[in-house]
Image (cartoon, rainbow over the protein chains, first blue to last red):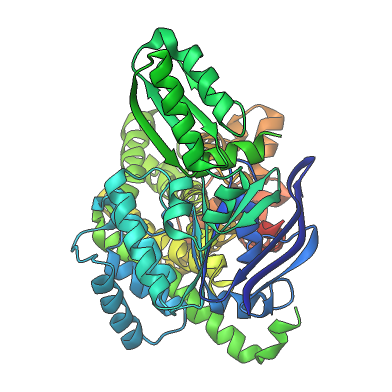
Length: 307
Length: 271
């Protein structure tokens, strides 16, 4: 069953269209990565799905409840971790979680107990106010606040934007732990690596609509399968090398002067590799590195959103 | 809408108050964690009081031969209520810009609790600051005539603060920008000068004097002077003659307008 359904969602701010027929389906217990550049409509989609924003058209369901007709039941079923760490800076982590616990209508004792559990689970034992927290700790506290009722559906809007790599790793670890408990997660991100790391399925959004959907592996193969990468030792022979690679490959070769890097899509992997190496040795071109690889999500993304 | 009908009205009211108190308690924890903010909140009007009282006091001719402080203190109490406008705006815009309001709105709590909590917290804060300034008044020799009158005056001052709460909330919800608060805070003093808080409107150019007399702050301050038993400027105009009435009418009218505007604006944050 789908935990999140969006059908032809439309939203405009004045004359600026944010969502233009946005469709999405997230299966229960899976992680969906919503991948797109700034201004693609990711945050607008999350705000509609979390009842913060009313769509101009289309409909959406979260945890089986219509977001327009049953906002309170939706709110009971979701956790939202927004782009800002939406916690109180003056309060301690414990005080924040107790406050939100009370607002989720836990009694004082239950709120205290739940706060203690979450502080422990998210490794947030720090006696001081939140303003003393590192960026990663704040996001983890934000995450913990979204998990007070252990909601079946969790929305993470760019959970690691602005974090250093170590803090990003901490947040990823926390998200993976939640996913292991069966929580459905809709995650927006500008980072292809993040979608690749965390998501079961990825929807690529551009200009307010989903332009591609699939597992990270499927999206990569949509771009024409594998690629052959060669690093040439002598920059002077780069163009010549690119010609050789292009003849052996399934499409034209690209090359980069600075990195002496030649890259082309290939269909017959080993044949192409053998042909290139034979031609290189006949022409006396020396290769520093040769590799067959699948395209990165970056390449998928650029090719999908460029048009 | 259909959903709200699920709970009986009394249950809804109970949750609105309980959640509102949870939200307000957040401010109380702030005060305990950062007592200096309260200290500065009191120190600011105290410093202004002392500056006006000692620097300008000698230049102002106070009726009935009382000292300037006897006249100034009720004016400063009113000004302190006015300063609350900026404080409410700061709190509203900060929560909006940091995503805290969004978190509240994405939770299954009573939607009205965000505004109720703000109102309760800001009103309590004003009670504290007013108490501090009253103590300052006693220290410089200001005295009310009677306890009953004093309580009535304090009630009218807080009624004005209650009305300004909704103005602050509305302006905060409209601007959503903590930077915009500076504009309002800059306007607080001119609004105060354009009233009877510091000088008699009769000494101003005719039309300015009329504007000052009709300034809601003037009604509250004149009523407070009357109830405290402190000297006032009097004035022959209808509004000056009916200060206590107007000190009730003005805040109620402001509340009626801005309460509706604030609530509607809050409900339309989803637009």
